[in-house]
Image (cartoon, rainbow, N blue to C red; front, side, top):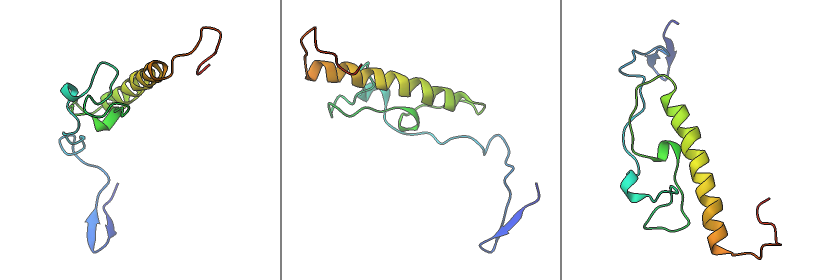
Length: 94
């Protein structure tokens, strides 16, 4: 794809693999419990690009976003159950 002039600069959408990689940084795994909840802020859950981890380009980040999103959602459900115990005959989140 040819460069596209914009804002006085020439931009290209095709980048080398070394450039087209997500940046590092985010919330450390040591700050989370097993449910992806922040230890310092009970009730606040983290997933995906909020987390500090690196992987090569090629779908790994998307896979991790989906996987940690599901794990955090399950953690939220478990945490809510702990916060509001129900009688066995009362449905909760179903």
